[in-house]
Length: 407
Image 1 (cartoon, rainbow, N blue to C red):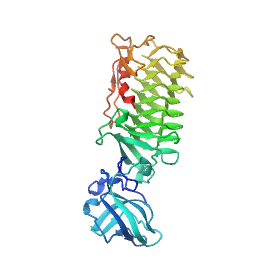
Image 2 (cartoon, rainbow, N blue to C red):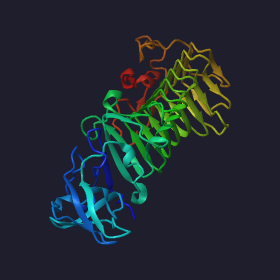
Image 3 (cartoon, rainbow, N blue to C red):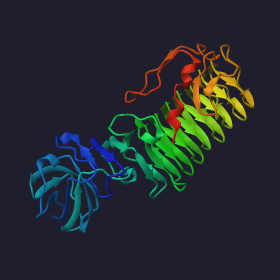
Image 4 (cartoon, one colour):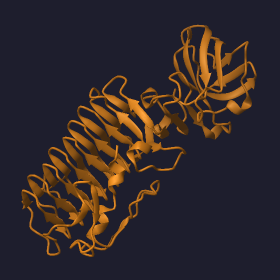
């Protein structure tokens, strides 16, 4: 048995490890997960063998608690874990989605109804029907607890960070939930559910990968100071993200990358393979700027991108992309390697306002202004990003401002 697919989790640093942390709106109750303290705490809960009704002499159950997730932390013959209140019989009795006592009659059950959980690690692996649950994570620092990941989201479809109110879509790191690998966790966020999404999260301090995902859209995320790469996605979309001071910045396979900035990464800023599209991106001061079609020659395109001041190559290809044009390269060790220049390329200083200060807007008079391909791309429906989805010039590739990478 599993929790309902309509379960929504709430994570905030001011929650508690033993709170219920979730709510299923399909049952029509009141959402008590969006508060720091549990709505109800009991230590005298009983339950018959393999029954779904829990009983408390103290009581306090109300009909409004339907759909709330409870956490059973301990008790004689209780199976520790998360359960949903399916219905409330009266103040002393509530019916759960499944039995919490599979091995004997339960006594002295310690439960909490509602209240946010204090760390995403606690609920990322809780089994959810159809794996469609959403997790909201409030601004704060979430440091590695155990395992390979800080957040192993095996049962989550969508992860979205927020600052003060759900859906406020922060773009500055200090306003985001910050997933901290603490130089111990191998990986920050792992997600591989088809059609999944990670939005408005920062990940840092992992020994291997900041974000490690497949079949995933990543929006408005920041990854820095991770050992092997910052953001790695196979079969997905990456939009309005920043990756800096990693081994490699953004590593992709069969992915579209738009409006992203990669700087100060030891190896590659952006590395693309298989069928990919890189549009309106900047690579600055990396080992290599943008490495295209790194593993095979199955295609790809690079449009309206800027590679500037990278130590080795600006644009590098083992096999050239199927389409390469309307790009700018300047000040790299070698501007182009394995790639034929496009007829509309700009081989000149893009004139960023202050590249060293991470202000990648273009100065007046930049040769990149009005030098790009006119393109319109619809962004994923959940995003209301600060960067435009339309591009009329190379200058729009700098629309991910330096402020989004501040820590």
